Image (cartoon, rainbow, N blue to C red; front, side, top):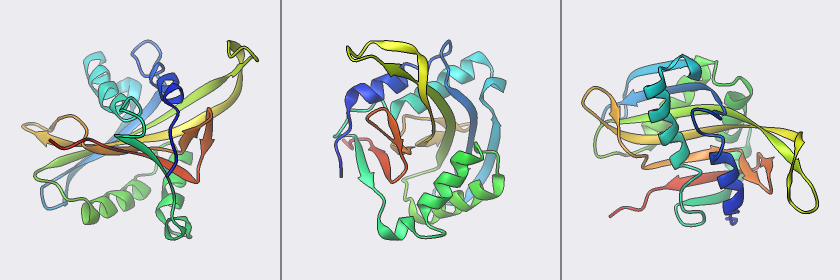
Amino acid sequence: MGNINREDMLELTRRMTLKRNCFDRIAGAYFDEDGYVDGTFNTHFLKLDQAERAAKLEIAKAIPFAETNVKLKEYAFSDDARKTGGIRQLLLALRDCELKNDALLDLLYERIGEEYRAAGPFGVFFFHGSYDVPRRASDKAEQWESEEVYRFLICAVCPISGDYEPGRPECGFLFPAFTDRCPNPDWIDVYAAMRE
């Protein structure tokens, strides 16, 4: 387990607003309390109306904005997770296809349904985003030119109620980890809310 730099996470969340939106796609599934999929969705993020975009941005932002090294921790993938057909390969494929492959998403939903235990119905929300990481001068001031593009996924698992209304995320992740302002695909930043 590694430590997360809070400034890196704040740099990302500053791009998660209506005016500076970094997301291009949102996908997800609704599950019943037994882990069976009740319905799925997959759409371009900008096709959501403004109120819906704002609500979904709050869900996405909760993951990197969480208290670093307490609620959000960085983990290296295990050897099993790195194998062909492992979760790391699936997440890389989903990132590379920008969440546009429903068959890959279905594989992940199946895995979540088998492994995640919830007290009631829940929703899983996936966001694909990209961030042109600006080059920094020696005095740490940002320059205009981009150093590289950080393409990433955020996943948030939320309890749902009523007409598929999501509550605050209970867990989730940022992949690949954003380490020293660079993508680190051998690591993942995992979020877990503190239970009362």
